[in-house]
Length: 283
Image (cartoon, rainbow, N blue to C red):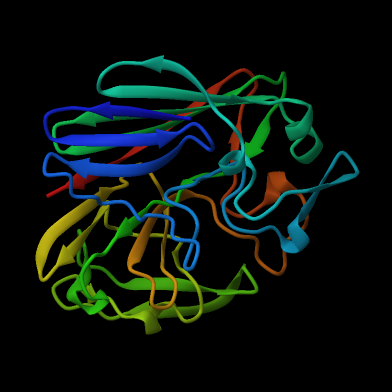
């Protein structure tokens, strides 16, 4: 099942499966989201919860019991309920159940709110702790933007001039190795060699936004000012780029197995809620 929202400028289609944004078009019907071609990557924009990235051995320990969580968690594989709808907005909800408790023994509700505002789509996440104790979690976005022209015609422009140091992934985990991105006018020309070792993971950034340029002209802007971490990713020869705002990232090889002590984890107090959002702006 899908839900569609629209205004005079944009139309967004969201799948109830994973509450995943599957289409974002302008009033000329130009598509900005990746089409999920399985020959490259069968997703459009999955939601990452209750972890971002991978745990070492896909497992952790809580109260002396071992639990297993797949890469990026389980929210992207669950059916969400549409709980509120207007012409320009839609709110989806996923609550804990017996199946989630087997993987993540914490009671929660995750709400994902989509809202169109002129030429922008705002995507908000609300995590509600329904426990009488703290719960640990990470949350992140993974939108893949379609690049209809030759990959080398595109570049990414960071909002601010800064030293762009990113962590390397090894077997899906954050290694101690780091490399730097060289920029010209805060801009990096896209080429597939950048991603030969998987995603670029930025634990810190001064910039609050990245603009994808098409032939040096603004194409899509992602504003992630509330998010401390960022991933940028594509697959070899794939005509898309992912700009991924995150709270959290993969385990390090030295991880303890205690989710509460995981690097980058968020801790939500009993009966409290967490809220964050980012914008996709279309030019």
